[in-house]
Length: 267
Image (cartoon, rainbow, N blue to C red; front, side):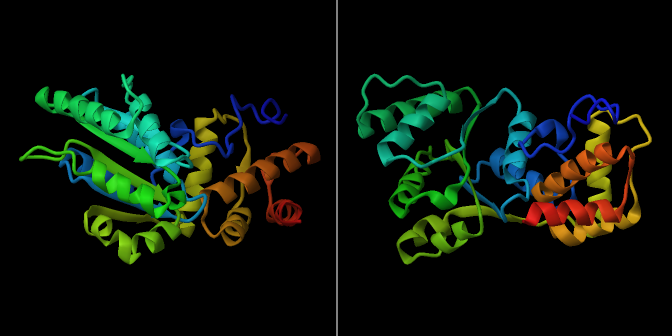
């Protein structure tokens, strides 16, 4: 609605996890580096946590884009399935068509697939988003999948991605074996105040902003105060602010506009 007015190629503050808009704050850079290290070094189980809206899914999509062809990936966005269905979904995402649909046969086929990759000096990564929704029995199943290995290396690298509740679940006594096997553990932090302005300018530039559209210093300060540095909340506020600027026929986004749209957003 407002893209033409601001001379934008697309909306800069969509809340979808678009890796082309990925902004490397210090925390996001560290998270990405930790995951790449864990995968390349075949550490087995990695864990990425963070509050809602901090960019965990976007980090994972950017990770996949940075891995080369020697790494096969499976990305499970919603693990709300039975144990058997989850294994079937993992095989399907790896492109494996199981001949039989029982658990033992599917795990055997997955093992053969992983062994074939290893023999060709290739790696495999399973990323499970929203892992805090996994039941303890499913997490135990994930641990058993991590047992697929040779004498020298792990055949499958597993990235558990979730909200802070995932850590609480991993602290359960029944899951202590899984918790002990997590070799890389990183918590994504919200953006620092200094990052918020860079984040906003980064997304505007990616959207092709060539006009005199401007978020002044006071407006950025209010955005940080209202969002607590959570990228998804920043996107929502900025999107509403651009709409308000369009309605007011102004390309200067002021603190007053930010306050107004935030109050509307919170209703």
